[in-house]
Length: 365
Image (cartoon, rainbow, N blue to C red):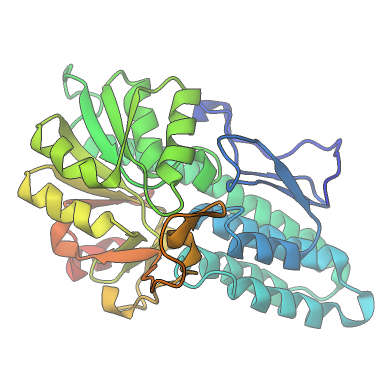
């Protein structure tokens, strides 16, 4: 249901240098930019229930681990707003359960819901729950924006491009999937680093993998970067090796949906192969994600549940057949990159170089 709202939505701070946002909170409703339709159409969906938010997460109206977590938090706030006074506790608990089932891999979803549940457990009345849960969801959103900006600073320092590093020549980088304002609270993780490089005049060019099968690189990353005037070249996923072999790229910068205690990283399918290519071509490989993506309860990447999606996403694009009907399809959304192929993991808490269990414990406990 689409409705116009007069209240002012939460937006990225002016320092974010981007007007692109994926979600807008109005107190009584959540608006999501339907990322399935970009770049051809900018269409906002207005949601007033937790079930609607859960369905939008499952259907990939909103995607990107941080944005999923923020959306889920707002979904709990909407559940409290709509709850009946007689049975409000059961209704909110049910909403949290339904939201947690919407996507299995991105740990930010569960982190945000656990945080909302802790606030809910301390509420003694429906009115108290409505206020506290809404406040907590907004806090999660605002903290994500601040974390994105902090990660960009940590990343430039890890790359040797921070203040005091002289006047280095601009560099070219390659990225995969979409990790920008559309995937976060409004600035970006890996794409936030790229934005910061551009702001500092340290960026020559971004090579953006198209990122099959949902084409987040061509539909979303290229769209975001062009809107912000950042030089971008779109390439087929299979062209990444040729680009690295040409010697133009200094760093591959990607996001993450879950990082385990030993530094293994689950991210969009195709990330693992990029890490292998980076090591062969002696190109730096950087993972940028908020600390809410780190799951110290999982020992290694082999413990991460990998979401498998419908084979139609491979066999067709927007209803247009690309493959023989009925052909068997392997369609994992993510793969796991081993820690020993990663040069540095960046979160708002700092950097873990050559990640392993000791470095991860030092920073995350």
